[in-house]
Amino acid sequence: MGALEYFPESFEQEDLPNKVDIDALFAEAQNVLDNVTSEDRIDYLYQMGGSSGGARPKVLINYNFDTRIITNGIDGNSGSLPFILKFPSSNDLLDIANIEYAYYLMAIDAGIEMSRSALISSSKGRQFFITQRFDRVDSGKLHMHSAAGLLHDDFRYSTMDYGHLMDAAFRLEKSVVAYEKILRMAYFNLVTNNRDDHSKNFSFLMDSFGTWRVAPAYDLTYSTTSHGYHSTSYYGESKNPTIAHIKSLAEIFKVEHVDKIIDQVNESVSNWTTIAHNTGVSAATSEMIGKYIDNAIKGK
Image 1 (cartoon, rainbow, N blue to C red):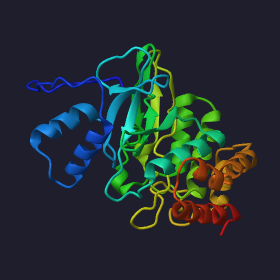
Image 2: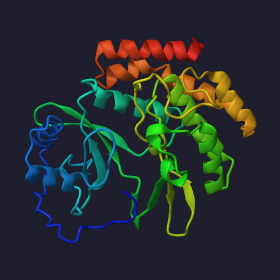
Image 3: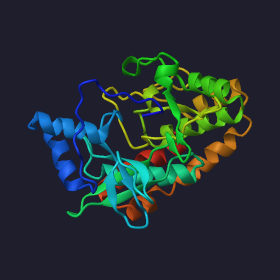
């Protein structure tokens, strides 16, 4: 990811097929998770996945919205854009791709910047979430740095607070708008139970002129952690943050439009049931998440 690349001195790159069979890739990824894959297939998946990292298996692809053709993410293809395709992990809900796409639609409606994303279907009828790479632009590559890297935070044992992120965003963007960007994401994560909001899930981009900005949001989905805490704290509170903590952050950083931000996010997530139905989220999952959102908005 980002603008820098390296190749091991002795690495022999396999010639990959141009067209991608996502069912076959999904099967290979499942074999890796089940520890039943061979070394040569791991090398193949590594070439397809690059250094995208994260908890879920991923591959880099090119996707053409007009033809809906998926090709490998290594070779350039006319009319195609670079995307990340995400496979479910062994611990994910069966409809995790649908959930993440529903969250993407809610986040966009809530005023959060995100890269263009979509649900795609395989020949076997499976659905997968894809999202366009924001570190690739028409002019080339953008430098990307996560909050974990910039602020020297160990995301596994994080001491990050949304206040730290707001401060870092302002220092890099040199604009009070940066405060609002982070606060908006913070409140969205609060009311949608995205507790996997660790410091590697926030990033910053730098262009060729040295100008920094907050990267589009990513990895927004329903997520509980093993101990029931948000990975990033809200004004010091990780287990049960409330709207009061959001307003405390707004007061410290003098965010004038906090009520407008809260109202816009609330209005967006209040449409969860409709959005979930339209994106193929199961009835059971929709009800579970819907109850959480309703209670969070009401402050319960």
